[in-house]
Image (cartoon, rainbow over all chains, first blue to last red; front, side):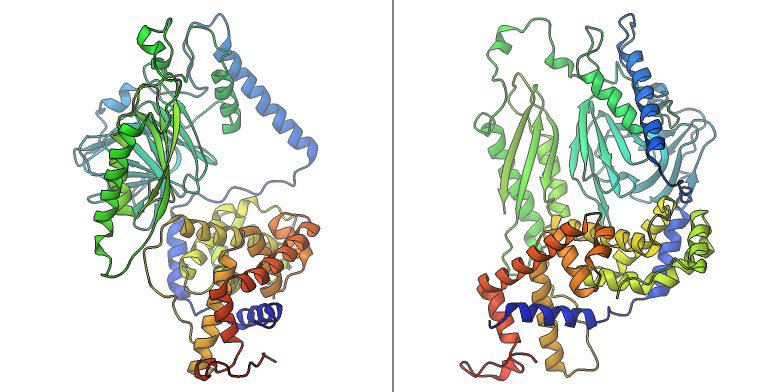
Length: 388
Length: 213
C-alpha cells in the first residue's frame, strides 16, 4: 500500500459522504411512543449543581448511613441484622392472600396497588406487590414477562417450569426464574435480587428473551446495574434471619447509603455472634477434624472431578444447539466460565463471558447450577476456558 | 457536520416541555433530531448493524433521561453524548454475543454510482469498519467524531467527558494504530491495496498501480 494515511482519509470522506439508509420513521416513532407510554414521566430537571450543595447531599447520605449503621451495630441490640428498609413479612409471599386475582394478568395491564396485593397466574406463579410498587405486564401467555418500574416484588414460581418462563425486567436487566422463590427490588439505578430457593438467572433482556449473565442460587443476593446487569456485586443472605426487602419505601434515600451500611455490617463490626451476610455453614464455633483437613480453597486441579464432566456436558449443550449450522460451516467460539463455589460445594454464581448461543446457554446454565464441587474451607473462585 | 444546535428559544421550549413529560413536545423533539441521530449512529456502528433498533433505543433513553439535562451544555452536545453511549453499548452487546451468523452486511445501494463502483465503495467501507472494530472504544469514538463527523477536539472533549488534550492524544494514537493495522495485516492491507486501484477487479496482476486523486 502506497499511502495508508491517504487511504484512511479518503475512506473517512466516503463514509462521511454516505447518507444512512432511509429508515421507517413512522414505525420507529410509534415504537418509541409505545415504549414511553409505559415509562414513568422523566425526572424533573435538577437545578445546576454547586459544590456546597453536593457537600450537603453527601453529608446527608453519610448521616443516613451512620444512623443505619448505628441500628445495625449497636452493642445492646439483640435483633439480627436487617437491611435499613421497611420490610414485609416473608409469609405474605409464600401464602396467597385473599385478594389474589387468578389468571387476571393481561398484556399491557399496569399494577400499581395502593395497598399490598398478591396476584396469581396460571396456577404456577404468584407474586406480591407492596403498596406503591409499579409494574406492567408485558406478556402473559406461555411466558410471563413483567416490567418492574419501581418498588419491589416477591415471587414464588412452582418448580418444574421451563427456564425463562417467568421474567422480571428492570431497565434492560432481566431476572429469569428456574422454579424458585425470590424477591426483586428496583432502585433508582440498580436492581436487588434475593433468592430464597432454586436458581435465578440475571442478564440482559434481549429481543429473543432473557440472557443469563449471572446465576444466583438459594440464599444469594446480588445488586445489578440496569443496563443488562453488566455491573454486579454479591453477598449472602439468610431468609430466616433477614426478612426479604420487599417494600418500596425506604428510610434511606440513596442506595449508596444502604450499600455503605451493608458493607460496614459485613466488615465485622456487628454484635457477635451473628454476622449478617455470612454463610452460616462457614462459621462454626470450633472446626471439626474433617474441616481441618479441607483445602483452604478449591483449585482447578482439586475441582477437576466436577469440572471435567461439567465441561463435557457444556460441550454437549453447545453441539446440540449448533447442529443447525449448514454443512461445511465451522464456527469456533471461545467463552470464559467464571464460577464461585461456596464452601459446601454448591455453585453460588456463574458467568459465561461472552454468553453462549441462547439455546446452548440455557442448557449450560442447567449443567452449572447442578454441579456439586468438593468442599473447601472458604469460598472459591474458578475460571474455566471453554472452546467449542 | 455535527448534530444541529438546538439551543435556540424554540428548541429550549421543546426540551423544557419534554422535561415536564409533555409527549407532544417529545414528538417534536423526535422529528427535529431523528435524522442527525440516525446519521451519527450509522457512522459509529457502520453498515449492516441494527440502525433502526439503536435509533429507537436512543430516543427512549432521551425520554428517560431528559430530566437530567441541566442546560449547562448545549442540548445538541448532550444528545450527541447520549447517542454515542447508546451506540457503544450496542457495539459492546454485539461483541459479547458469539456471532454464529455468516450473513453479510446489508448493502446500501447508492443510485449515483455504477454497480461496480458501488460494490468497491462498500467493500472499502467494510474494511474501514473492520479496522475500527479492532481499536479501543475510546479511540474509535474520537476518530469517528473527528474524521467523519468533523467535530473539533474541543467539541469531542465535551461529548466524551475528557480534556481536549486527551482527545488529541487519542486521535493521534487512533490514526497511528489504523495505519499500523493497514501495514501489518496482510489480508486487510491486500484488500485496501486492491481498492486504491480503480477497476481493480479487471486488472491483471502486476498492472500499474494508480492512487486516488
